Length: 487
Ligand SMILES: Cc1cc2nc3c(=O)[nH]c(=O)nc-3n(C[C@H](O)[C@H](O)[C@H](O)COP(=O)(O)OP(=O)(O)OC[C@H]3O[C@@H](n4cnc5c(N)ncnc54)[C@H](O)[C@@H]3O)c2cc1C
Image (tube, rainbow, N blue to C red; front, side, top):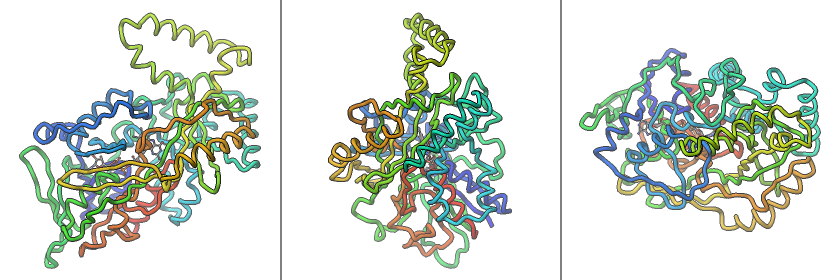
C-alpha cells in the first residue's frame, strides 16, 4: 500500500519506521526550516513573543530560538495567555525535548492500550530507554551510595509516594562521561540529531489541504502540497496518516473540512499545568558528572488528583542559564572564576561541611497536574489558529489552599523539602504536552467523523480524548502504533 504520513515529528517518524518495516511504501511529507524560511518571507510577519513567559531552559538555546522564530512566521497563530510551539524541523518538538519517557508513571495507561509483545518490542528497538540511577550505579558512583539511594526509593514507595529513577530516551553507548547530556544538542539524545536509519521517504513540503470527501470513483486520496513559494504539487495515496502535532493537525483538518462540519465555537485543548520549585533532596545526591535532564520522578496523588514530578539537577539548570550570559567577552573573567570555583568545589569530599554536598542535592522540580485543571481553547478563523489559555476556575484556590501545603507535608515525610514559599507557575501551555484538539471530530480509531474517506487517520495526540498526567509522549507513541496496527 502507498501510505503518506503528514508530519515528521516523533509520532510521524516512528509510525513511518513501523509501516515501512511492515512492507508498505511510505512517504513522510514535512517541512524543514529552510522551506519554512522561504515561505515565511512571502507570507507572514507574525511573531508571538511574550517576554514574561516562564519556560524550560531549553529556550536559551540559540538554535531553538531561531527555529521558533522562523516556524512562528509560517505556522501563524494568535495567542491569548498561551505559549504554543510548532517547529518546522525534522523530529519537530522532539528535536529539543527533555526525553523523559515516564515509563513507570505511564505503565498503567500503556497497559490499557494492549499492545502486543511484538509492537512493544518494535518501540523498544527504536527508542533507547536509559535508567538514570542505574547508569550512575554502573558507570559513575560506588555501590554503597547507589544501594543507599535504591533502598531510600523503596522505602518512599512503601509510604505511598512512588519514587522512580527517570527513564530517558538516551543511548547509553553514545554518552561521554565528562560531557553527559544536558539541555544542549547531543548525539546521545533520541531526536536531537538527524535519524540515520530512515526506512521511509522523507519529502520536503507542507500539506495545505487533504481532499476529505472526494468522489467515490477515485480510489486514491489527494493532497495539495506546497514545496516552494510558487510550487505546489498534487499527490495521491492509498492511505493518509496525519501527525502534524496537536496544533498542526488541527490546522490541517480545519483547512480540509467542508464548512458545514466546522465547529463555530472554540474546541478544548488539553495540556498540563506545570508548577516549578527548588527542592532539597538530601537522600539523592547527583554525581559531579551528571545527566543535566530529569534524574528521578515522583508519582503521587493529592485529593485524588494524580501529580507527576520531574527532578532536574539544579546545577545543570544554573549552568544553562549562565551559559549564554557568560559568553559575553566582558564577563570572561567571571566565567573563568566560576569554572575554577566549580572545579574546586568538585574536588572537596562529599561532606556536609562543604558547599558541594548541599549543591548536589538541590533540584529544580517540575510538577505536572492533570489536564482537566486547564481551561484552554483553540479555533481556526481566517486561516489563523487562535488559542486562549487558562486555568480551571477553582485552580488558584486548589493550588494555594490545598495542594501546596499537602504536597509539602507529604514530601517532607520522605525527606524532600520544597524551598519556595509558593510554587512558580510555568506559563500556560509551556509544558508543551498537548492533546485533544480534534477529539470531537474523530472516533476512537482516529478517523474523521464527517469524512466519507475511511483511509485517513489522525494518529497524534490531537485525536486523543485522554491525556495522561506524566510526560505523555511515550503513551502517544504507543497509541499511534495501536491506531495503525491493522493497516
Ligand atoms: C523543551 C521541550 C521539552 C519536552 N520534554 C518532554 C519530555 O521530557 N517528555 C515528553 O514526553 N515530552 C516532552 N516534550 C513534548 C514532546 O516533545 C512532544 O509531545 C512530541 O515531540 C510531539 O510530537 P508530535 O510528532 O506529535 O508533534 P510535533 O513534534 O509537533 O511534530 C509535527 C511535525 O509535523 C510538521 N507539520 C506541521 N504541519 C504540517 C503540514 N501541514 N504538513 C506537513 N508537515 C507538517 C511539523 O513541522 C513537525 O515536524 C517536550 C517538548 C519540548 C519542546
